[in-house]
Image (tube, rainbow, N blue to C red; front, side, top):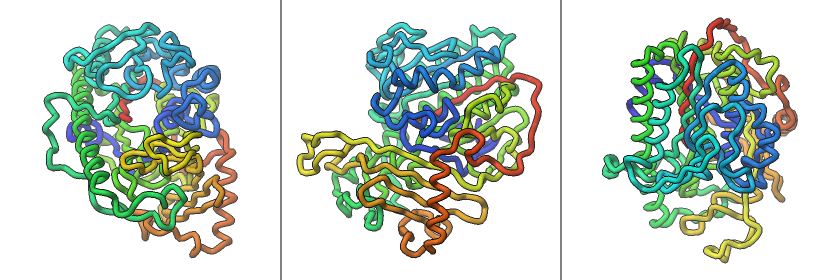
Length: 470
């Protein structure tokens, strides 16, 4: 994504240690919108029963989310693209439900699609087909954002949140990019096609080495994901050029990020996210805007729960009056340190056996290709991730019948190939267990924050554009 790196990263700050606090779409997006850990917003997975866009979410955290506060600050708010996986379902208010705070609303019903989808446009159903010029969702999102910028009130600040489907499946690239990256394959380094022999139950199940059909499937997915992202790259370029043409570029903060990482073959898992490892919990994050020096590479850890407080900080909201677990990183584009943080996930499974994989039994999900399952009820875990300049460690506990524990020293083992739980001093393990217990119940100020912050005061309401891909 050369355009995005050039127009955002090279013109501002790239955070090389950005993390999601939960590696799955709906709970991660809920954390982005609220600035809270999953144990506080209570969205556990992508299902309605897991609180994804459920009536309980709508009555609680959604009513206190980012756009509500921005609207109170007189911001014009615009959303387009994928919102939450269960959004628009009849059990969740149908297309008529427009979350509070959004003045312009163009939200995808359900999960990612590129063609043949339904939008809620300010609470009214709008159906789309398979005509590239009219319907390709990534392009539609940016085109509607341009219309919003043309029709906005220039006397009020604005906030845009653009959420294209790329590079989520079904990986439908724009016609002009279908032949790109024809020789590209998923990287073969690190933990690719390695066995998960000392890891939790789910990671001990895949066949190793992977079958040829699994490898072919994941290589094809890798290529197609790259192809779909070329349209996102174009989207960023179009938006930056538009902001420049209306004389707002130098007055606007632009954030580029994602809701989770992704794996293609790591530990013999063909494709997905949901795991505690670096490839699933690390996310891209680039920011440009007023006061941010260009070409910065910042190493201190930043979380997706920091996005909402940072944007609210830009808008002039008093953060002490907002219920968030994250913290603004606007003032630490210079330096910061967060000594440790929490990563947590509640596994999804099916109560009955998958008919396509009858030998596997119940309790599993996402069993493709070749009946390799990417998730299960017992894939429920919580981790302390320590990254403080001296220590680069991860300690994780599973809520399963084994009470399984995984510990990694990422300084010596960046690909997390060896679980060192049996080599660590029990006193240290006990200390990490106690730290994890506190993290799992932290709320707001009791959650770990940055140290040595330099506070900057802003007396002007800047514009904000947030683009993130799934």
